[in-house]
Image (cartoon, rainbow, N blue to C red):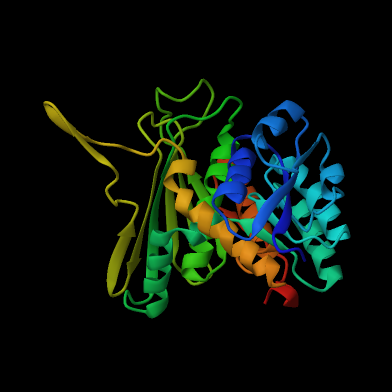
Length: 337
């Protein structure tokens, strides 16, 4: 491996361009050597000023570019399976933005491919595991100071939803972060989903069921509820309260920048996830680079990506049916034990 880990970034949209910037200016031990995006103009803009970074319209061309030693997948979810399998075929370690693969069947195919290799190559970008507040809450739960966990109360609000955002995407895109965070915080699989639908907000686009109230049951008997509201209009807000037999703890309420001017004082509210979780993304990518250079894979893996997709699919069925839907997972393979 070279002195600086050569990374190919697949996708140069909002997330991909931010990761290119992060690898070039924030993270140590890595360099961007190739970027792939069907919109080559967008890719060229992302790598402007980065010496030696090549641009490609197709993912596989970027994987085969000189100097590529690892891959960061930030393309749309439906393109992930093909990209992951291509990286595996080349023995390249991967950091894949969520979802691993949108459908659980595709995630299973990726898992089977990694099992055939006999070693982990992929990490999934569930960045909340790297957020300082979430890590403190995880440490507190693991310490036992709150006693046996009984409930998690979660909030997930966005200013507005992008064009084409569907009611199903509130569950399989937005709430996918809470799915992984709940599994990780509690150390339990999610076993069933119910989705309740209050009257849609007047701020929601026509036909979008927003907000929604999602209720998960866990293998350990805890309950997890999520208020997801993607057109709240005022800010990006993520919070989580853990309630145990001996106490409770809440994250997500830390004060942001307070601005005082003539006649008043106001507190700024983050407007998107790249602001709220900027430090978490930095720590996540740095940890991935460090582990990859050491020949290891750490953090959430293919099993976690598969489990999240399977739970999200059950959630979509619950949304459509109005009924409680059980989550069905295959037995956990030894590679992910």
